[in-house]
Image (tube, rainbow, N blue to C red; front, side, top):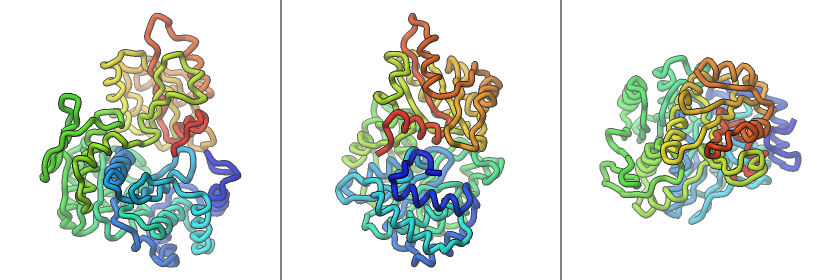
Length: 450
């Protein structure tokens, strides 16, 4: 089976397909296997440029995007590792270019790295994510750059990326309930796992946290490890003032454009990135910050679709947004963004939602009560872990929403188009609940990330 979103002509996709046939899917949190493999490869994780290591339940992708935009605005070459991908495996690896915009890894280069890592593993027990993490370190060590931004896959303490022993800065973004079977059923337990990326004596930047218990755990860990720490709301802040973003830390104040990424939650994400890049030892100028706010991009996170194959199914004039947020915390910030849109330009809001069974759908849906007219629940293509649309509709109903199962996103758009009252404004449609669903939508729409 070719992995989701790929075609048989991709060398890298074929190599990953082979690996998925040999090794178990999912996560098996441990550092032993990846450490063994990296030793065979010559420990490439120790030959990286300055590393910005990012963990958190929500916002880690956005802060990664802001860090990249800031550094590239200063002319730095920046490697970026994120997961999961939306459409193509290549999205996980962005190779930095000096005084330019980094590019997704070349397919032949990617395939060669996969083959070399698989050969080094010599068929021993390992997960595909661990192999892909080793590929990250191999690729990034072989291409010169000024910085490497590396996003944690799951948790922190036992995530495969946590073999990094000398980060320039560790960044902990908002923490809430998610992946409870792996990380624990209380936010304090999840915080302890994510705090595991902190290294003794190394800088830590803590993003906005909703829970005092989470901040207590993070601060206790940082103090025990003697980490210089900057905390959002205490050591650095950001807020909107007269349509501008005002950022302030111990180094001074900056008056900036609002971030290109929509939603008020992005103000705190942008602030964490600015403080993290400074903590990593880079000089950050106001010109860099201004350019970054205007250029930052992060596909599949409150991304508006304005063209593509799916647009024809929607009512004329409809706003279509996609977002991969999939837990209660993400639901709250996405719903807040939708409410802000509603305040500025009232439109009926419809949700088209698909989720996998490791998520907690009722908590996600509750954030949209009183805001969404109706939820259309859809399957996620090619996923064994998807929640059946009928079951997901029942969860939306239990949360207090009107819901109906549908067979495809296109069908849901058609139904909205057919049943919409012509006397009301064109609708606002949010497609999300899973990065996998967003990936399917971007692939079907013909607008994959670049």
